[in-house]
Length: 105
Image (cartoon, rainbow, N blue to C red; front, side, top):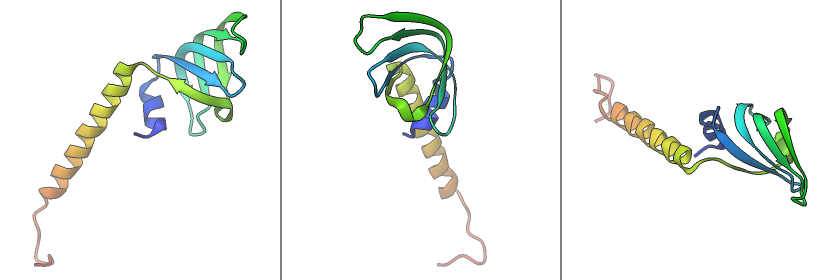
């Protein structure tokens, strides 16, 4: 599974983001780009020590600072199923090709 396809499917879904410096952000994904820069809304930020909290309306996180992302398991399962269906549809479309006069045989 490609990370960007998962992030695109996660738009408007809740997620947890931990940065390399230990800070965490819990919010709903608004947008992401090819560099994994993300925008979250309705965010709860926690300090690296876990002793301070902030509520933010929206925040932008640079992709290179992200340690990991956590998305709901149901979303992960849904994206896997969708990719499996697309893969199967691609296989059946290739197998249904009727060879013409220029085909090897």
